[in-house]
Amino acid sequence: MNLVDVTPKVWDRILAARLDKACLCCGDWTPGERQSLALYGALAQPPHKTSVVAQIGQSLDGRIATVSGDAQDVSGPDGLAHLHRMRALADAVVIGVKTALHDNPRLTVRLVAGKNPARVVIDPAGRLPNDAGLLADDSVRRVVIQAVDKPRPTGVEVVRLPRTNWIEPKDIVRALRAIGLNRLLIEGGGITIAQFLEADQLTRLHVAVAPLLIGAGPQGLTTAPVASLAQARRPTTLSYALGSDVVFDCAMIPGAARPRACLHALQHSAQ
Image (cartoon, rainbow, N blue to C red; front, top):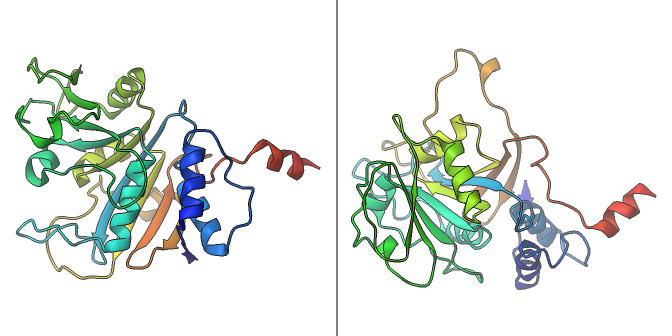
């Protein structure tokens, strides 16, 4: 298992790579810092490149909350820091309306250095009230994806898309790309993540597992069952020890397994 050491030095490099101002391979790095570059470098895509990454935190027995809905401490401190790093590397963090109504998350970057991403709520039927904290004007872009003609507060961007049972994930990705949001973090809940997974819209999936047993409660991911294991998805996966949690980094499409190398490294490898 790869032990991650996210030092200020390596995090500064990753943030610079996100802006296409630095590479992810050159430099004198410790083994733990190199694992940080491997884990987060794949998320620091160039500003123009589309990536759709999902993250879910769960217990050893695959639960994301108790039966009563308590999900406050599923992830340990290092798991939470990991989530905030993923937010810092995204253009936008995307959640479903059920998560918005139940958890009222802030979706900000607080535990690490980095800028707050845009907040996107998928709300097909217009259930999110206009006084929700996620729609408050705090200088961050706010986007609501809906299928109904519901007015939103000034400054909130509304994306109207058709729906059947839900809004098609590929339409959501296309619409967000059209307004300049290319690097998407699908944060929750589990049903929303499953929708993007089943639609083959995820570039990567991060499953952060914390060492606790809940016993019952909602599962992290509930996807369509398969008749045999031969039909199961088997993404290219690496595991990383963060400290309090273990992250399974799953590359969901070919070519997403490793971060890009700089031109100097490519030339050197070709010699």
